[in-house]
Length: 183
Image (cartoon, rainbow, N blue to C red; front, side, top):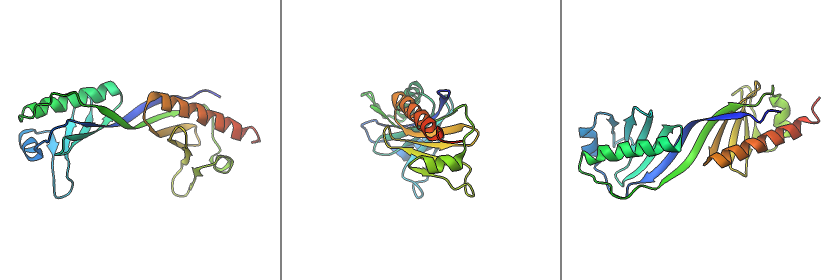
């Protein structure tokens, strides 16, 4: 069985600027923002390149989504810091970035019998009337896979490349093991 190739589609990362931010001032002066405090306490700041969105909270905490690499996360957070400088918020300490979740997609070169795998593997959910994919959860590393009958897959829950690679190896091993009795 092929190892399977994964490509990162989205990284969710958090960072703290260590300083409060006036969201009203930011919303008034920057056109790439959405702020509706009645509905949600954070401000959404959209970045064109790399295409992403950052939730900015008045505490100075950030949640960055939509990037495909840690380098892009850093780039986006630097852009946010530049925009904050325009409203007089000077960030002097380099924010510590923490990856919360990586979403990757890929495939294994196999047609998968999801009905069989739902029975053969532990920690699965499969309701084909509701959704065509099988949900398969690994405990270590913490990862959740969506598996489709054509061999395509989505992996979520890992926090770094090593966990992502490791979860793919385990997935392959477990599927191979489950299929060895399958005729």
